[in-house]
Length: 333
Ligand code: EPU
Image (cartoon, rainbow, N blue to C red; front, side):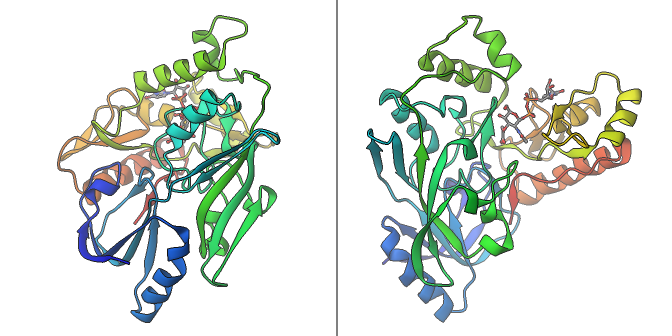
């Protein structure tokens, strides 16, 4: 298999920042993985598996082997309404393929950038739907055991923008594919207010929901193909209900979301940042998007460090004004 040296990762990350990988290999068949990991071990090289590169920020060059998963394949099992997708498939293309095949359930997740293999890592979610609701199994290569296996949904330990694959206990697992349990029955998920407002129709079609989700996203989130970004940079913070009540006294407009636990409340990080005037501010070529305070963008030739330092200033200001710690959603390397 071809291993390249000194490869610039700029085309492989949606922030479009430069970072040099000491070695780089593109994988078109998961069967190549054991050989690659054996090679890295032999050479004492750290490894990093890259999917669509839409949820990470390279701050430094990478001194090891970057493995780019470019595997392809979609299989529709109509009898069980399950779809299997290879990790290297594009997430949005999968959403559209499912829609065209009348496999329903992931319409609200349209236009989320990134690959299928990255979707379970942070348990992608948008407009009232989280990936975990439709995961049947996740196929992995276990680097430690040197074997291929699959995990059921329970084993993936999904939580808000989190999963086993983000934990140290899951770090030896490379996601090679995803199997979703979808439905032949169309049932719109309209919990998200802006989606309901846009779809005044009482029973919109699946196509209409996809179209509306795309419109909402395009109206406030920049297209990474045109303006480098990685979607929400921070997770929405979860605070105690007591803390929330105190904040609400001082900031009556502060929105909040239930968490399923009456002692905890989720706050929109975007609101906190917006309230502090972050929208549109910049540091060199790194900037906060004009239309959404949670989205950092590369306006030209920003380095990973510019973006990282801007993000740090943002989280520091939220901590000192609101006493709330923001955690990055994006993986920082
Ligand atoms: N808001 C502001 N200022 C802004 C932007 C938003 O005050 O500049 C307020 C909004 O008015 C709203 C609240 O903040 O009350 C939340 O904003 P929004 O509905 O845009 O959602 P979000 O919480 O910022 C989350 C996800 C997004 C997902 C949307 C829609 C996280 C970290 N982000 O964003 O996911 O698309 O909900 O469901 O959970 C991503 O993860 O990369 C991502 C884009």
